[in-house]
Length: 302
Image (cartoon, rainbow, N blue to C red; front, side, top):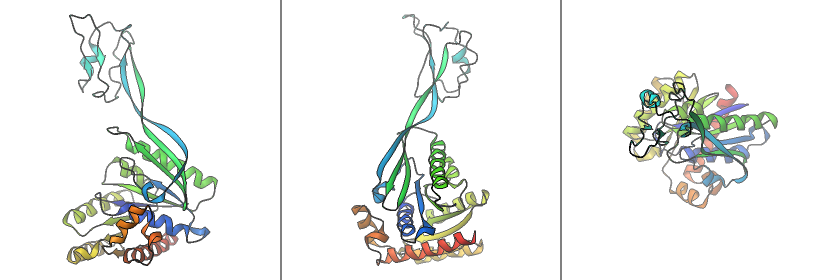
């Protein structure tokens, strides 16, 4: 099974639009390109807006744990407060006769307070941090997730979603996995690129786009992931697009295509379709199909 992950050094470059187009085009390419699609951008998932999934499974995700002090056992010794680096332990009110408590928002779940407690009054309580889903689309199976606001461990959730997709791919002999990765270079991105055969990096011709392209390429290079680059909205600032292509050429990174600015992409999203399905002959639709064909050839070479 081959795995492609679509990345961007920053948000808003058009990564999800490209992923949706790939999901559609893979489904039109015959059995060799049957694909399972994964939305690994669990902090702000939105691929489902253009894939119209039909949910068939929902599962809670436990991202971590917080400490809880049993007031019946607490001896008010204060050892928990002494070792807590995050000031999450609330001291008792001397006038009320209360015991130590833990602020669940401040608690980082490190469990440092559990071990020095002489009364064994502290335990770690698992916390539900979101959900992950298995759905069906017109283009094949779709695995996605939603992390609750303010929750952490998005890298753990990305890994879980990708593992579930991989299991189905192995069980039902899917040859391809298309992953819509998170933006940036953080832990969730590292989880998304893990095990990938190819990374397609979507960038844009702006100063910040070039800077963040360099950062994400450093990340994929560190993990030995073969990379390709496409430039979205390339015609809005041709000089910058040429700078991106020159940078990629200097570092032996293939640029697989340019996508022009095209209002059809926005119209397709508003109607809930990949642009290659909504209007395949549009400038952006044709460009994305050309990029897909180039990336497909890359898969055969890997």
